[in-house]
Image (cartoon, rainbow over all chains, first blue to last red; front, side, top):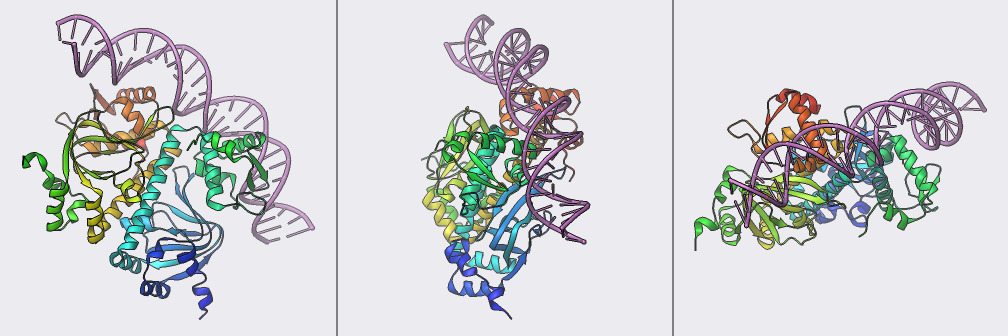
Length: 235
Length: 235
DNA sequence: GTAAAAGTATGACTTTTGTCATTATTGCGA
DNA sequence: TCGCAATAATGACAAAAGTCATACTTTTAC
């Protein structure tokens, strides 16, 4: 056995990163440690697929993951991004349905699997966890509804500015001050809900307007206020 | 006192219509009956406003309500519709934020108000209710994400067909077989996420294609299969 | 280390959808 | 019941965004 691999840095997930599992009691924490199952996923691998039945929830220890729905012509719509500390697959598990989206690895990841039975057991006996899950779902719902309205009402350019600010917020910045993620133009397009070419064009517009810099695959925001203004966010 | 007005048909909300409050115990049911507060709202009235702080949840006894977000140029995006048996305002209450949408009455309504304290008290002591709320939120989230993807990927015509099928499903049909709601073209536009004129045009296209009939303000679906095909839903 | 594949960039053009203007039509209140 | 206001309908046009073609660049795999 190699315990340092089986439970790599999950204490971090719980305490440092402050996800819903912070609410677990001592005994639940150790039950989780014995029940969970961590694995490594390489870039491009699928963690779960739209249409599959969930058998538990996933907790991301490390890496970057996208959850997307596939439209008719195979175009992906990215619904959510996940990084260390985030949990995945709870929506479908809770509503007892098949996954409505696919989780795919953008950067090599370590992910723990917590079996359905364990998770529901915690949920039924720990009202703090229930409460945290309700808040998580409420937050996701708020987010989804805001994006829905934006998609219906805002032009691509505004949504693009918004997406860049979101990516910066979510991933933070590397040593160069660029968004700390190697995200393709296509993925950005699939977040914003537009064509890849349009994404490329708007990014070069932003570059010409000195709002961003393009450092290879990395994007650096050089004028935050300008982007905020472009996104028409005034609060 | 006039008990027949204070608690008009709430037993129906609970048992017949099967909302989350089915999970309440006997004593909680009577506690709710004494704590709740029912009122009548006329068409056009606002039940709560985007930005306000929630003080409880609302349970719709009768009537038709829309929840929408207002975009920059004052355009409404309808997020959800509610009818008898539905509850309102739980998302913001649970996440402890201001309302992210406005609830406005489309057809005269009777609505009960359940104070925050009572609701949270039930939630903490009744794990069946917690569970039901989690399922409700999960369902809403799934719905929102599906609409998000549709908005990003499907043309207006498909979304319109989808919306008509949804309205039929949600409101049922009246004696003429038409959708049992007097919903304006503008409201339909704000559900679909398009301009009112585009809505009018597509509805007359659908009429010419013998998919629907327009009986004054009412819409009758005469070719369900055709609409399903137009919406590109194949499951 | 090199070739193939994937990703990025740009131009030309088309399609979709929105906007504005104008005219019916309906519903409702005085 | 009349007339006003809101809603619905339609046309002409403009703008936004998508598609297709092609070139160039970077990554990846052998």
